[in-house]
Length: 205
Image 1 (cartoon, rainbow, N blue to C red):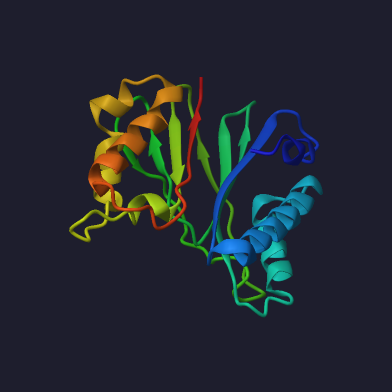
Image 2: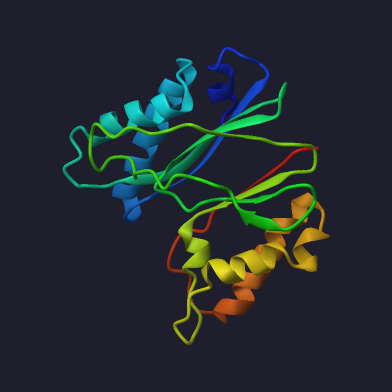
């Protein structure tokens, strides 16, 4: 989360967060992600709504995109006063949500569109009311596409099983991602990592 983006909302009770993944690798991908971050931050600080931020950012990223690169992302705004989470998905892996201290399951999301592919796409803001103790787990496809020596993918099924395992659930918040990385390391059996791995947990306390 970028504190400056949250200040740009003009409301100290709202917090923004996002997780994103860029196509390609190396310097071109890093530069495109930096450009995407700058554009998203500028629109977020202007006070636009989540779907407007995504729509405007997509149109900007489509300009002069001769390399045909794109960014998938999940963008959300949480209101501390009423517990409402507003979110938009841009072709990113759907997050998981744990409500009422029960099991993790998929957060209902529109698939949306990756940013930078086609201008004029419209996005829809979705809303859900969260309560104390609820958690949201976001990740990039480097997690689910991790491969072992038998060329098997870690996949969403194993990811969900890990999220709902006692090892993960009972660990303190700051140790949970270490549990997930430990599961990935065990699964991959030393096979070199082929893609970036990013994970994010939102916990309401």
